[in-house]
Image (cartoon, rainbow, N blue to C red):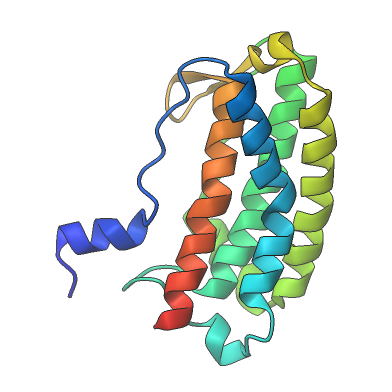
Length: 178
């Protein structure tokens, strides 16, 4: 049994996400690189893993490596749509999705991770192209997240998805050691 402190370290191994408070060109470029490189890093972390390995979790009652990979595909598909909506509509309200329930659906539980790796490759190629085409005014556009009753500027959105990539890569590294 983990103490709350130990569980928090496993749940947020790189720390909790800290919102980006303002647009910073250097930070944006570095975060785009993280998005661009995520597929390759993910493939390297999961290469050669057996089905037994893919069932390992990073913490008690946490997701398996397989669920983490499929979750990243689900999350980042939603992220790309949120980005496109914010770029083409004035402050749209996005639709949240039940991540935990998605992680229990048949495609997550039964489908090999290669299907989600393919999705991530395509989504991240499109993410990178779109993010690299954006200027400061674009990054100051926003969407409303009804679950949090909060406006997210696109520079903060980028920071969140960059963090999300590194956060789940670390989960996979921890699970592989279990």
